[in-house]
Image (cartoon, rainbow, N blue to C red):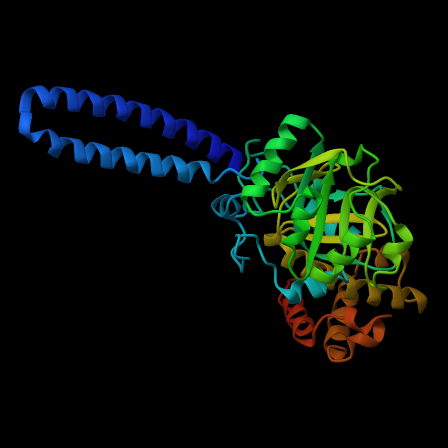
Length: 387
């Protein structure tokens, strides 16, 4: 559950229970004083103990209040329960470094096509739309960003932060709670302070509607130093040239660039569900950002996206080569494989399993020999083989 729900509901319930038992305790003391005389102290002690336990519960409940929409560890585990792999101490899904490395060579188009073809049934999620209308993961892509460097892919695990427009009364309470939690005065640093190596910092800054910039070159340096990765900011960036000097691999996707500093918003949640355009982003999603836009991939689907892309990548290399040699028509190259082409492609996979890197501009984009052989075996088991 969300912390604001847990905190407020538990606090109200605890107060009601406390009031009820205080009344009950006083009733028992008054009655037992009259009826049992010398046994009064024996009755009082359990009642006071019960009251103290309830008060301790109230303190415990109230201590769970932090940023209203931040997820507790239990909430994180519940709302990301389809992920069965490794996690960070706070419960955030931790997709493996190997999958992240391979994801860097996936195109945004390939990732979106895979997700768009997955229904809730295939993704293991429940549906409220009935048996014959299953929505897909088609809302995981958003474009309209400017990239600081258009040749640097941003890929990693999402660490999210949610900003709202500034409101004095709410801001005061958020700041007060942050002080209790040991945070500094600058709310805009709170999400950055807890970044991990490999994270992508994903910020919803008032849905990008305000021009005051969240990150300049000081925070840009901090994000890069802590993560070795980039950021996706649904908002604006300042100190563009300062950020360009942080590191040649430091990259940011933003709505736009603005000189104004950040002063007109407040932090309402850290590592919570946020909105980027029309995408719901969860902490631990795999972020894939390129010049095409950004895709947020649910962690439980990341391996499927990677493997589908790697198969498609090799099919494309094979088809492009056939077109250049005049062997394949446009229709054949675009998926209309004949039985003979299917057999030729499978043989091509086996013949080049150990040297696939020579077909790619970046040899690291080639799948592993083990994956290639497994894919060829999978194709051989098809009757008849299909692309």
